[in-house]
Length: 342
Image 1: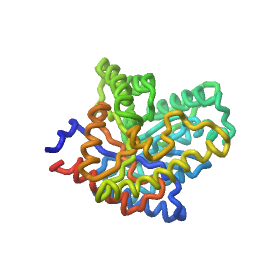
Image 2: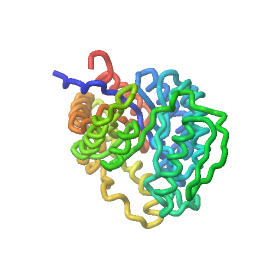
Image 3: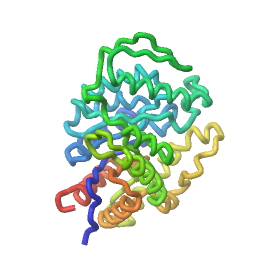
């Protein structure tokens, strides 16, 4: 008997758009095909990370790529996860979000963050010590801009005087916001500010994030129009058999790992302590869920329940996984977890 689905469970796609060994234009074309398929299959959204100067991210301008996704899809929502506000001028970030929201017919999901690797921002001349304050100021400006009117702001990093805001997002009062976090204090901030969260890690660890979020959310009697998303990220590969799935996923993860480590290794910086350094470690830590359709279904449902999550961020394309494998995994998720008989 199949496990019961958690109530109000939704499914999205997360993508680093890391180097798969193909020509860049071919990889973009393949991802657009994947996005089109996910639109037809009924996935909720396509979320794209932002990285710079590294094969870990061939999409350094997520909004630019997502504008192409918007033209290829009809229902699939889309957005950066996250847009690095520490790097972007907040007014430019605001205008890009507004444009993308109109180009997509009001389908933007606005992920914001400060970035996890200061070296990426350092190449733009942004000092690591300035990042926390710069991000907070940019976040305040972005959210103030969403209210419209004329903008004034005096901070340490940004000074705005009588800025007319002629462009507004299609979604009012503003598009849904997201943060990616593994910290309970950030989860509490997100709940207090009506933002969705995305987390990665063992389900028992993510449970601390979702409980912190719900503790604050339960104290609010605000006017949220729909339930918040508490996202759990997993790299997923489905095969015809367990051995077949492992034969596809293991080398793809190793390539993804090299892409991830590129700037760390190039600059002799220690990688994050929670990064799995082998494929087996990635499976053991629950980052990767790999196997037959039945196994993947059962494992994902167990992890979602344990984590207290209601949104599964499916990373079905990573490393050098063939497009056909990513499409098969997406179709299996739809039939096993999203379909009417799931």
